[in-house]
Image (cartoon, rainbow over all chains, first blue to last red; front, top):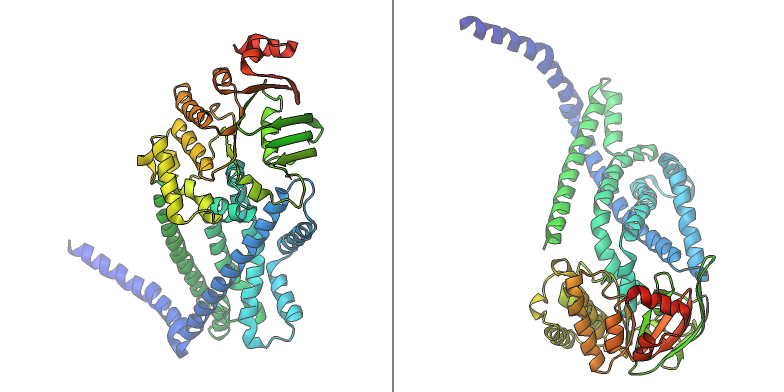
Length: 254
Length: 240
């Protein structure tokens, strides 16, 4: 078996000199040399911050828009004036958001709407822009969830004398949540990745970090490291959300 | 107690109720029968404004429900309703189903509502199911819970929309028994049903509806033994 051992040694030698060493060198130059990892750390922090803030804004806006649309649609032939105005605004908002590119929305909000914002505030403007964008999609998810609840539930609530707001809050939304969560979690994952355009307004997120390092280390690995970081974040988030979903569906089987 | 005057309801082109004038008095048990599509469910649902009438008025205890200034949520508290599909809240326990409205509306404290719920559940023999979720109950049990959920609001009138139509035959009896007991206690009831036996036994007045109109009404003895309108005769010949 001696020949087998020597063959393995030859292969290992080739592997380590031709493959592992260059890769290690590459990664060393990209991540460790000159403390470049700090770009990535900063990027991860900024990406997560933007995603988290945008997620909260998105859910808040989405819920509001969805409720306006559902209440308007269910209020029969002649809805009240203020409801019509709200509904018009909700439709206008979703149309604009879904009909224009994210990057352009980001640029418009930063350079036109918040033209006076200093650059260090860019990350908050970006988070707001992503939240406004996400809200339009979240509203459709929540609206579908609300519509999935049988009309009889609303009728039962109203017949007991509950107001439409109480019926929505105590009867419809708690049931709709279970139908909404899977799609909503999907949206969160998309949102995390969509923040990658924040570099357009000079926010150093994971993508921008990789791009900055690329200008110093003219090689392929900076962007691949960025990609690996996103992948790891998405996998971690997916696991977390799956866990939450499972916990909720367990309580469902009581 | 309830007055419907010149009540009309259309869904788009389809006219479901044609100029109905009807009065329901305290203590009456009015049973509404008729072929499907005759508008009897729509009529019942107009009484507590689950359907908005196209024209006409509904008065409940002297107040015009169709007047936009009327607080119809408050009036609905006094009109219990039981649905064909039970419509229990699946995310809440039986107990919570019953106490939700009285506590949310501030009519009873949590303890009062709870006590009341247990008393009502004991009456229908389901006290042991108080902390169970509705899906664990049979159809008949669910409908009995739905009835006491409405009763927990201490309504002045109970509206029943085909309460036994979605039940397996062997469960119809237990629901009708609860309704009969309610009738004996003097509750004012309006019942849309296909149960002719119930109409005969419990009804003080039976209405026959067809194509959006009340074609005939009479006390049950007369209604069933001496029907006058040819369409009613035709209908009774089919169902009896």
